[in-house]
Length: 434
Image 1 (cartoon, rainbow, N blue to C red):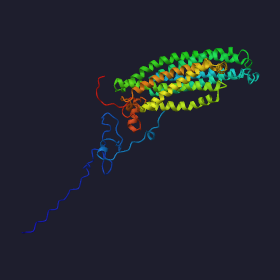
Image 2 (cartoon, one colour):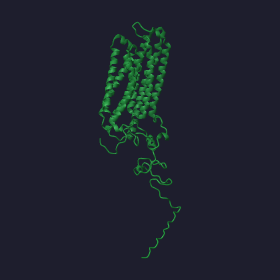
Image 3 (cartoon, rainbow, N blue to C red):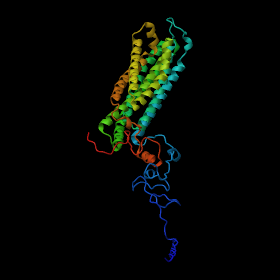
Image 4 (tube, rainbow, N blue to C red):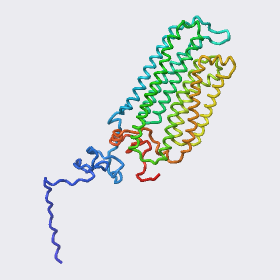
């Protein structure tokens, strides 16, 4: 058999310069960066993707292709503190700030005039009945401290309510303002009694000088309450429309979320009124037994911790822990009932101890007791909603703006709002008939 002929040599023509190297449609090549970049987010109308940026979690990850890790938002753009972004949000914030400044100026003048006319050297250190005759002099400084803290706290509540677009808390701020108006009206009589009790320890004619400014305080608060209520009505419509544009949950779930919002707002208001009562009791009321005083002092930090835990427990839907919190609410209600009885139906010596601040303490005790009863009712309603689908959706209470969502999705910020703008979180895209 003749030998086989040698195979002919095949020459491959070199690629010409006008030939373009084929690259992956995914934008991934082994060589230089491909000039082709796929669309990001599956939208032809979206922003153009950045070269070489392939977000994780999509087709690339499923095919084992390299992706670009999400860059934290802090390195791209620093987080900005919330600022009002509409006419009515600015109006609500500015009314609160101006009211705070006016009232703090009034209280500072009252405090300065009272302290200037005070001459405690004329009073004995101990009265004939064993009581401290100088105790009424602590009424106005304590009242001023409560007002300062109260209005600073109110400004914080307003900022928080506008940031979260929480209509329940906005309405609560109006009721809070009404409560402060009642407290300022009660203090007129309280200051009059304190000046009369000090007698020689205060210059004559002090109360007539203070009376116009004492009357002005509740008048300013009344005007502020009316203005805040009107703006709150406007904000209710504005926030309702903002939520409506992004909402996709059924009505029953929205009702459960509303109950949750009411409960969280009540916890914030409970804190102030309990703190106001406790501070007045510790500063003004003298001759308190050591055990009762130490228990009252210890109750301050414990109350703060319990209120924070109450908010966490209701979000996690821990049933037994929530029952314990409700029992604590009942114990707190019993405590305020006990204090009311002690202030108005006790031995003559104890009545004398409470006299310098009995009216203001009674006001705070009644308001706190009413709030506590409402809190217990709403807490029971929240517990009835446990296990009914609300827990997965309570992720973050703030309703973000459209620009916040775009920024979050662009830079991959670690937030619980990714792709949706409603506090109830993402829900399945399906039609439901309620």
